[in-house]
Structure formats: structure tokens, C-alpha cells
Length: 397
Ligand code: XIL
Image (cartoon, rainbow, N blue to C red):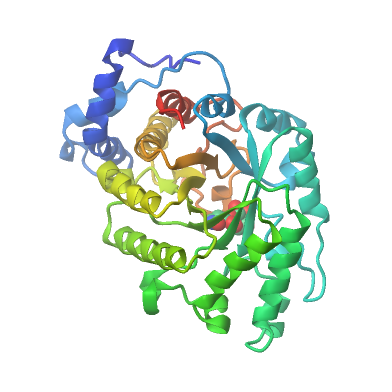
């Protein structure tokens, strides 16, 4: 798989890599400026050329899953049931590229809980069976979250029964899949400092019902129900060199420190990594690596759990847009995989044919978005090359 637009010779590649870590963000900003209608002259021409000249050449035709596995890294993607069972071409590509599957919706409360006293595992079980048939590892997502709660939740869950409802849910769901899951996102998005609560906690229904202890409780119950699964705390906005992300990184780190110091069975941090091609100029690899080292020093592993790159505000021109998206993937993964504690990478979807961002972040110009490794025809894009290159260059785990 080669990038036909590349003009750089292979022996120049290392030089580019190093330069791009320093200048990549500026280069991306330069390309973005054109699309945003800002004056392109504001960014230096040299920076723009640097973005254009980055090589995304890849050797061989092995899948992302195989390249990652060769380094002891798990690669996989989130998927909706309908995409696998109603689109055989997509399902075939999924199995080719991925070594791990995470249900995008099927294991959320809304999907599993028709009522307070019922569980419906039918849809999720189909995904588990698919994964088992195709030798894919499984991640569960997610046992505790403030979103995707069923309609009955607000009415029927009270301070009196909340603890029992939470414990019952985790025991039943993690118990149902015990022994089959590589990992679980036990608690999702519990931190949101801008909401002004103590310790940066999000003002979620769970905080309101149970106070901060719900996090610890959830991990302890999950560990009892499925002692073999790795248990993750998963969150977003941990990526950029902005005051907001820095505050959030610090609050997440403090939460993890507290959990570890209390002997809570938390095994890894999940970085959702919903990146933004337009914001990638704010990525600071040194700062990110420092954060990841602090997490790893607590004895935790790190997974990139929901990687994708928003192209909503990038140029309409597909070639330009794909380059910026691929550069964002490459810069991020290069920095993050330099930390040996990072042992899994999952994209939130595999092909532009199916991305949650089509609903959440559509483009103003109405053009289809292109945030994932494969295009809507299931063909690899430069983003695929970028990910493949980073796996190929990563150190062995
Ligand atoms: C999103 C799914 O992609 C959508 O299909 C669904 O409707 C809403 O949830 N962070 C998470 C994921 O942890 O569960 C979210 O997934 C995306 C943001």
C-alpha cells in the first residue's frame, strides 16, 4: 500500500518524522487555514509544504491488526450490530483488519435494560458470538455512564435503590460475559471539571444518587463478577495542550491515584481520543507522554479506546483533508505508542461508511465525512497508512 502522491525518498523519512513532531501542528494549521477562509499567508509557506511532503508510504499489505499484533499491541474497532449482520462486505473487512471488537451501542444500559427488572442480552450476545467465531477479542463498553440510560431510569432509580440497581446491573452484565471479555470500560466519563463539582467529578446521575463512591463500588463489583477482565476507567478530552484538557488530565490522574491508593481493582486508563483535525495544532507530544508516564507509574496500562479524527472543519478537497486527518493520526499515535504501557488501539468505527460523527459532526457543506481508516468503499485511506506506519515503527511490547 503506497501513497502515490509521496515525493519523499524513504531515507528522508526519519528526518521528516522528527521535524513533524516539532512542526507538524503548524503544518496542519497552515493547510487548515486555506479551508477556513483565513489568509493562507498567515502560516509560512514552508510549513504548508512540510504537511504536503509528509510520506505515508507503507510496506507490505498486512492488516492493521497483524501489524499491531507483531508488536504486542491489540488493534480493533467499535461496531454496530446492523453493520456486521446486514453488510457482508463490511463484516469481511472488519474481520480482516481487526483483532478486537467493541460493541458501539449493544452493551450500554439503553440496549440491555428494557426495564428495571429485566435484562435483554440478545443483541449483545450476537456480537459476542461473532467475535468468538472470528477469533476476535472483546471489550465491553460500558457498565457505568451518564448517557445511554433507559427512559425508565430517571423515574425509577432513587437514592434509596441506586446502589442496589448499580450493583445488580454490574453483577448481572459482567457476570453474563465473565471469562469472555478481554476488558471492560467499567466507568465512562466520570470527570468533567468545568461542571464545578469537587475533585472535578461530572454532575452525573450516579454522582447525584450515590456520591463519588460509585466509582470505587463499580470497580469492586466488576472485579468480583469477572475476575479475568482488565478493568478500565475511560474518558475524553485528555489529548490537547489546552487549559481545559490539562485540567481534565490532572483530575483524571488524581482519581486514578485515589483509586489505586485504596486498592481498587482498576487496571488501565482508556483514552477515548476523539481527535479533531482542525485542533491537532494543539497537540503536544512531550506533554502527552509525561501524562502517560504518570499514569503508567501508577501501575496502570493505557488503551486508546475510541480513536477517530473529526474533519468537519477541514478543507472540502479530499486529498488535502485526508492528509490532515492522516497526519493527526500519525502524530497522536507516534507520541502515545512511545509509552510502553499503551497496549491497545481501537478506532471508533473502521470505515467512513459508518461513523457516529456523521450524525454528531456533519459538515456544513454537506460533503460526507472521512474520519476513519477505510473510506466509504472500504478502501484504505492515508489514515490507514498512517496507523500502519506507526504500528510498524512501534517498539515491541
Ligand atoms: C456513541 C455511539 O457512537 C453512538 O452511536 C451512540 O448513539 C452514542 O454513543 N464516547 C463514548 C461512546 O464513550 O459510547 C460514544 O458512542 C461516543 C463518545
